[in-house]
Length: 429
Image (cartoon, one colour):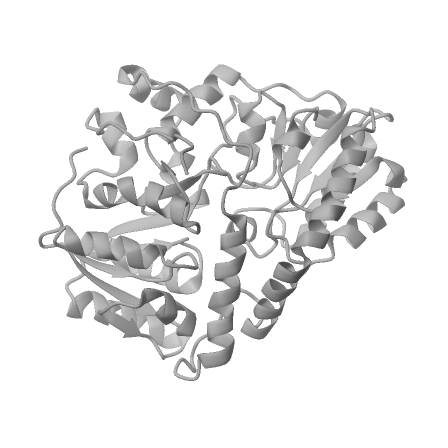
């Protein structure tokens, strides 16, 4: 996959991850010869752009479809760049861009977290091309590759930066958003409520860390076999758009009742919260209530975020809706049960057993098939680095501009044999 120049390319950016990543990406694209515009929907978008060609959108959602069509036409846009593809403004823009033959570049958190991000074209998560690619197709594409498997780091890398930029973004909206009267957040909570949650999270991080260490030690030193339930953010697009549950409580109920029905009576169930869980849902109270109803309260535990590796190293199996953390489960060769649409939901390595049967005697994944899958992702859509820390952005920007400018999208490039050599992860800060 040979990168092209940015000449005659006209990029339109919509909303990106909190922080300066989109601005830095735009700077490099402009140096490559491309023209770049950014549509901002609130003061937070504007604050992190800090460069020219900024287009404030001050209308309402009902007017957005016509507005994005006009922007495509006025600026002769060739490429659309966005972060996530399910929020209303992105979904509408993506549909209309595809109809016009505009190339759509989608960024998302890494499928192989914690030290990768995802870059795809046309859609991500349940809308990704990975959903239709078979392991056989991936294995064939890898026949000419000799890349060694790369171990997954046991830490997130830039969680504090993530929380800080989220806090700053919502602070800008809360305090200086008068110009954007038509702005509506893509999540159910108001901007003020989001700001308060980020503030609470920043203040409480040391206390949460202490509680987490205590609970983690209790599980690790307990001497009992246990299964892990990997929780997600209830408001996350993967959970809302690509799962059979409308609330996290529904999943908690399903998991605990399946455990109570099928697991051996000396086994335990450990719920691990997402690292960014901010208390907007009553996870601990719901887990306690349901476990008590099922008669397994003394065998069910709850841990607030933190590192996953220490818990996975001693777990028997894992269940989740469609969390990307499940990739670490499969990398260790552990049995996995999922409920929602996920890019890793392949019959070769994800259990199809009913949940009680899974807890009773989980089937193991085909580790060889998963290794081919993981190698395929590392050669295509998974880029080393991160959106939030300066070190992570430097690592990411070294590769991503060439991928945006390339003629072929990453999966086609590898399948066709035209993929350029990849810079694989080396944990150098």
